[in-house]
Image 1 (cartoon, rainbow, N blue to C red):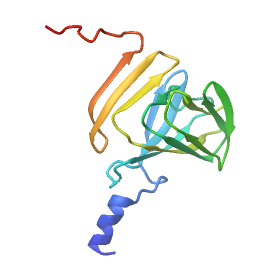
Image 2: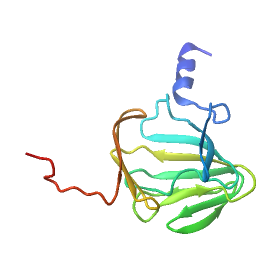
Image 3: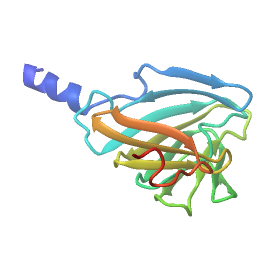
Image 4: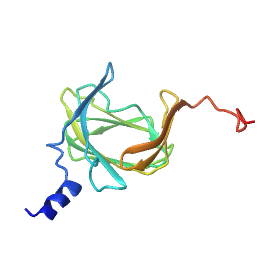
Length: 168
């Protein structure tokens, strides 16, 4: 392979089977292995990760995006996609499309007794606002370069300030 081909491969190709994974655990509900696949690539608008949930665990808190659109592709195992308050069964070959907006809060849950393996793919639109209906939180963030955050704040939805608060 030429040097140019090696450079292109490093910028454009990731194998999700070979990607180093991190293990994120927050008992009692969350236990997953995952790897962010787009980091270090030439991707500007797409993010992707491979995720494996332990039996009975959830991938992340129930949330909705105001800017990003997401897609989940179930590779192995069975589970449930909690969407808009409904529980939708998912299994190998299922592709779940989740547009941005308040109509589609979502969360992947492994409701089986075996690992659930899926790809998560999303646009990386910024600025982004993410709401967490179960906990009443809101995340606001901007991305300045790649996966680096230029600004990120997590707050409660019920703590509004007056526009003029703290101003002289």
